[in-house]
Image 1 (tube, rainbow, N blue to C red):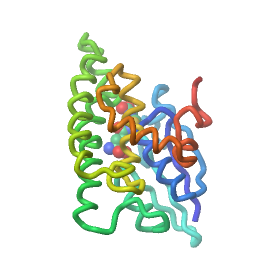
Image 2: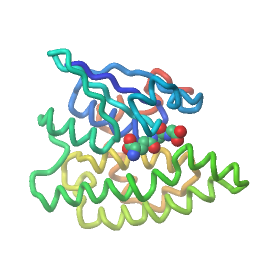
Image 3: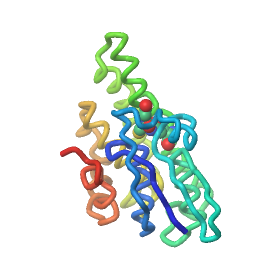
Image 4: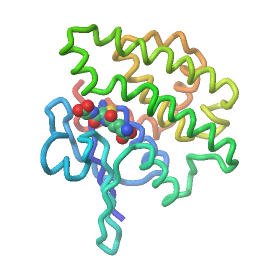
Length: 214
Ligand SMILES: N[C@@H](CCC(=O)N[C@@H](CS)C(=O)NCC(=O)O)C(=O)O
């Protein structure tokens, strides 16, 4: 099976998938989609990802059949089902719900409101883009931290890395870029530090990617 991840170094949704691939020790080819240079709007890429967003994971089976997977959360679900070694979801259905609910706080409650296309639109309207994004990120992270109080162990949900950690670490990275005072969330920073001590998270980090601008 061959995996090609079409992604961008600083995209948080891409970062989530890279973490999962690295935790599961899956080799993948890195295809650069520079969203600042509008690569996501090319005809070729749009055919793969009709939302013109990264990431897209192209999976080619040994038989030659190709599958084009979009949306980071369903991609994580696919990876966990197809490659169950080092699971990223707990076994218990209530714990699984906790993990998925944490992911949704970021997936639908924070990231879409600070996505590049939204930031460009806010800028075009003459608004302060940092003030805009902070007004969604800060309460979103506060909600995440409150939820983590009842789910966390060493990581966001229990003592093993889950999808929730794959979401939290990229979100904290982009929150800092938008000037959010992440120090207000000590529990989240503690979990982030534990994640970043793991080689898989280090390999998936934005500044370690081939298209990183340093
Ligand atoms: N729900 C999507 C969100 C993907 C997304 O928003 N990607 C951003 C980068 S993190 C993007 O491609 N933005 C390009 C744009 O706004 O033009 C997912 O989880 O895959």
